[in-house]
Figure (cartoon, rainbow, N blue to C red):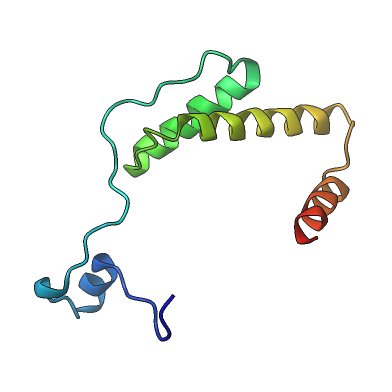
Length: 105
């Protein structure tokens, strides 16, 4: 990365009143059109979490088309953690501390 301040987005420039159309930067990631397709292997609570998250993203105007597999994996992990927590299989604090300490190594 270049030294110095990070460039501001066009939206921030509009909000601060420093917008100049000749200096607009094009977005790096283009959003794909279409509806997200839920993977068939996603079941149970993970499916409910998926639908809740899709609803939130649509309300925000965010497109997740092309990232469905990643979102599905996240929803499955979240459902598993919630299930294990309610069944007292894990202590959430110690579990996350162990996970985060493994990332630092």
